[in-house]
Image (tube, rainbow, N blue to C red; front, side):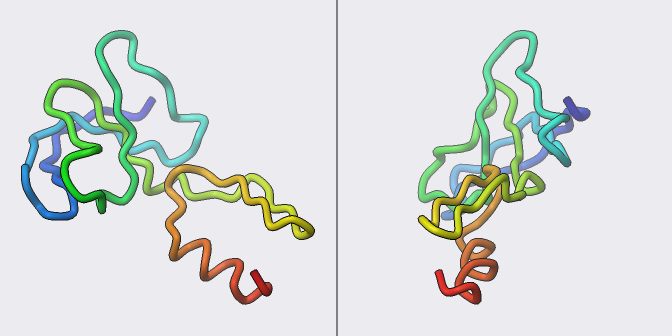
Length: 98
Protein backbone atom coordinates (compact mmCIF):
# COMPACT_ATOMS: atom_id res chain seq x y z
CA UNK A 1 0.00 0.00 0.00
CA UNK A 2 1.14 3.57 -0.54
CA UNK A 3 2.51 5.69 2.27
CA UNK A 4 -0.03 6.99 4.76
CA UNK A 5 -0.22 10.73 5.43
CA UNK A 6 -2.48 13.02 7.47
CA UNK A 7 -5.06 15.16 5.70
CA UNK A 8 -8.09 17.23 6.68
CA UNK A 9 -11.20 15.74 5.06
CA UNK A 10 -14.93 16.38 5.27
CA UNK A 11 -18.15 15.49 3.50
CA UNK A 12 -19.90 17.59 0.86
CA UNK A 13 -21.24 20.00 3.48
CA UNK A 14 -17.69 20.60 4.79
CA UNK A 15 -18.72 19.55 8.31
CA UNK A 16 -17.45 17.81 10.29
CA UNK A 17 -13.79 18.16 9.36
CA UNK A 18 -11.52 15.31 10.41
CA UNK A 19 -7.75 15.04 10.53
CA UNK A 20 -7.54 11.59 8.95
CA UNK A 21 -4.77 9.16 8.13
CA UNK A 22 -5.13 8.65 4.37
CA UNK A 23 -3.55 6.60 1.61
CA UNK A 24 -3.92 7.43 -2.08
CA UNK A 25 -3.12 4.41 -4.28
CA UNK A 26 -2.39 5.18 -7.93
CA UNK A 27 -3.48 1.74 -9.14
CA UNK A 28 -5.27 -1.35 -7.85
CA UNK A 29 -2.01 -3.22 -7.25
CA UNK A 30 -1.16 -0.65 -4.54
CA UNK A 31 -4.35 -1.40 -2.58
CA UNK A 32 -4.02 -3.63 0.47
CA UNK A 33 -5.86 -4.04 3.74
CA UNK A 34 -4.08 -2.66 6.79
CA UNK A 35 -2.46 -5.22 9.10
CA UNK A 36 -4.58 -3.92 11.99
CA UNK A 37 -7.32 -1.40 12.59
CA UNK A 38 -10.10 -0.22 10.32
CA UNK A 39 -10.30 1.01 6.75
CA UNK A 40 -12.94 3.06 4.95
CA UNK A 41 -12.90 3.76 1.20
CA UNK A 42 -13.63 7.31 0.07
CA UNK A 43 -14.65 8.37 -3.40
CA UNK A 44 -14.84 12.01 -4.42
CA UNK A 45 -15.86 13.22 -0.94
CA UNK A 46 -19.25 14.43 -2.12
CA UNK A 47 -21.51 12.49 0.18
CA UNK A 48 -23.92 14.46 2.34
CA UNK A 49 -22.88 13.93 5.93
CA UNK A 50 -19.80 12.09 7.04
CA UNK A 51 -20.18 8.69 5.36
CA UNK A 52 -16.53 8.36 4.29
CA UNK A 53 -14.49 10.13 6.93
CA UNK A 54 -12.74 8.65 9.92
CA UNK A 55 -10.42 9.91 12.60
CA UNK A 56 -9.96 6.41 14.08
CA UNK A 57 -8.76 4.35 11.14
CA UNK A 58 -7.30 4.50 7.68
CA UNK A 59 -9.09 6.29 4.82
CA UNK A 60 -8.37 4.94 1.34
CA UNK A 61 -8.78 7.72 -1.25
CA UNK A 62 -9.98 6.22 -4.53
CA UNK A 63 -9.80 9.20 -6.94
CA UNK A 64 -6.97 7.68 -8.98
CA UNK A 65 -8.69 4.29 -9.16
CA UNK A 66 -10.94 5.30 -12.06
CA UNK A 67 -10.31 2.70 -14.73
CA UNK A 68 -12.82 0.70 -16.75
CA UNK A 69 -12.42 -3.05 -16.34
CA UNK A 70 -14.98 -4.00 -18.94
CA UNK A 71 -17.98 -2.68 -20.79
CA UNK A 72 -20.52 -4.84 -22.60
CA UNK A 73 -21.64 -2.94 -25.71
CA UNK A 74 -24.71 -5.18 -26.08
CA UNK A 75 -26.12 -4.79 -22.55
CA UNK A 76 -24.48 -1.58 -21.32
CA UNK A 77 -23.04 -3.38 -18.30
CA UNK A 78 -20.04 -1.46 -16.98
CA UNK A 79 -17.50 -2.77 -14.47
CA UNK A 80 -15.32 0.09 -13.25
CA UNK A 81 -13.05 1.00 -10.36
CA UNK A 82 -14.40 2.89 -7.35
CA UNK A 83 -12.90 6.26 -8.30
CA UNK A 84 -14.84 6.61 -11.54
CA UNK A 85 -17.39 9.41 -11.25
CA UNK A 86 -20.79 9.71 -12.87
CA UNK A 87 -19.29 12.55 -14.91
CA UNK A 88 -16.52 10.22 -16.14
CA UNK A 89 -19.12 7.63 -17.13
CA UNK A 90 -21.28 10.19 -18.95
CA UNK A 91 -18.30 11.68 -20.80
CA UNK A 92 -17.13 8.25 -21.92
CA UNK A 93 -20.38 6.49 -22.77
CA UNK A 94 -22.97 9.10 -23.83
CA UNK A 95 -21.02 9.81 -27.06
CA UNK A 96 -21.24 6.06 -27.73
CA UNK A 97 -25.03 6.18 -27.55
CA UNK A 98 -25.46 5.10 -23.95
